[in-house]
Image (cartoon, rainbow, N blue to C red; front, top):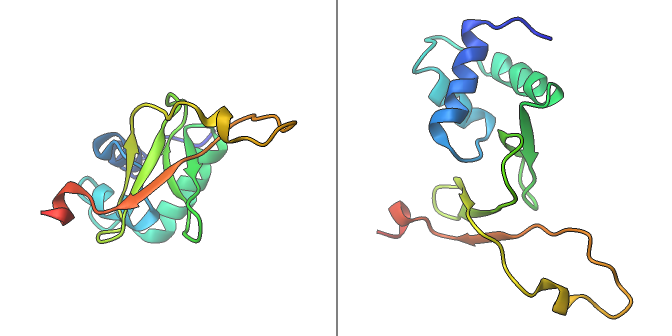
Length: 123
């Protein structure tokens, strides 16, 4: 267990404030609001530590580096904005996916990523 430093607290606060999956550079930008001079290496180390501790989980996007969000969230999906590259949580889930599964296959889970432009970029 790592000790709770100002940097670690600022990085946790960045995730809490954003309420969406973040990449390391987004974490750096948000956490610097609390700790001036925070470095990207500290962000990477802290993210790895928070994943190892089970506080964060990776959000995998095809062809992109992982983003991270607090662990233990209810089942949900994601939306990636093609303009600003931010990722947002989507509430709810698509019904009827079992109908898409070929006969004799057994569905055990799914991930859904929608891609488009967020409200801010679409305006």
